[in-house]
Amino acid sequence: MGINADAAQSSTCDVAPPVHQQAGSQQAGSQQAGSQQAGSQQAGSQQAGSQRLGSRRAFHPLGSRTAGLWLALAAVLSGLPSRVAALDRVVMTRDGARRPLAGRVIAEAQDGGVVLQTADGVLWPLQPEDFVERKADNEPFQALSREEITTRLLADLPAGFRIHTTANYLIGYNTSLAYAQWCGALYERLHRGFHTFWDARGVDLKAPEFPLVALVFDSQESYVRGVRGELGAAATSIVGYYSPSTNRVNMYDLTGVEGLRPPGERVNSTTLINQILQRPEAAPMVATIVHEATHQLAFNCGLQTRLADNPVWVSEGLAVYFETPDLKSAKGWSSIGSLNRNRLIQFRKYLARRGPDSLEKLIRDDLRFREPATAIDAYAESWALHYFLLRTKSKEYASYVKRIGGKPPVIYDSPEERLAEFQAAFGSDLRKLDSEFLRYLRKLD
Ligand SMILES: [Zn+2]
Image (cartoon, rainbow, N blue to C red):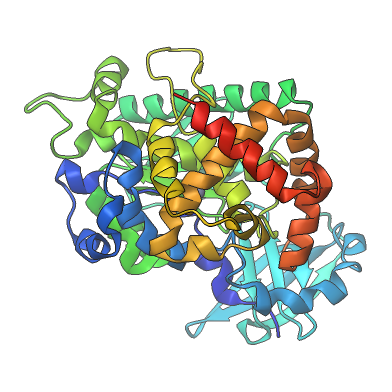
């Protein structure tokens, strides 16, 4: 066993390419997705399910898809901290080309495979055959500054991209400055709301070690070209995603989506963008970009660790919990954690076929997220469980999430360990908790 080179590359937390299908601009992936979906296509942000689900399976590494391949790392990880001060230099070979990389090894397999983190924050899982040289020197690892990352982004991105800088984000864009500013403002509000939310619950977040980078392509076409290398064929069916390997959010200008922009209108002000994106048909797409930015925050502020064994119900439930933006306010985000009606509707539909072991299955492993037939319900139940736990057991949730946040990369728990960890935080009687949970959800309106 060793490092799965494919793991981080395909490790996008996909999510919701909702509506483009309805909005008209989309086609492709949607056909294939449609058949998987069937009944799930109802309400707003959730039918997202259709295109979403198909790809989710392929791209969700936050789960245990790669678990077996990484198990060997456990044996050697304990020796790593002392090496973090040194800079590891490897010469990577891929597709016949050589590329020097310098960074810090954050995990190492018995067979010599490593996960290397470069100074821009990117994670490189390397099999032994992926590199021809490896040596360490005494130079300390240092994350690149915002200026250095900006320079690197401009060099790496296709011609025509610029960088819009906000307090916490670098937004690379080739669409209008107004749209980049709109995204930057939305993300800053989310950032503020996210910190306030966890502060109030006694969870200390840390400042990101690397600048938060989001790329906004001017059209779906240029986005597909830009992300095809990472997403493959699924690029056409995903509206936006966070990649734990590159640590970036990728998306495209939603005001260009057919059916959303008033004909002949030039989208050159944030006021107009807000008007367009407040339309009900835009809601699932806006929810997606907020959802992805929430993943990025969780993985950069210490709530979760990239490539660690984060239970998918936690990663996704959290992101869905935050995905209801308040576009009416320029400053606040009063809607964080507000009732997500589409998820609630989906959850209530699920209740009719929900088995007595539903909660346990959700917690013990990620299997329910892997199949389109069960994933949409798993997302809804993860949201519902977060809604219940954060509102009725927020102290217990805080201690649980701190424990999850402390997990090292690429070491995977067994289903029994996951369950035990959950029970240690919320009590051993799952049946009792389940009845309480269902009672709470049934009362909501
Ligand atoms: Zn997600």
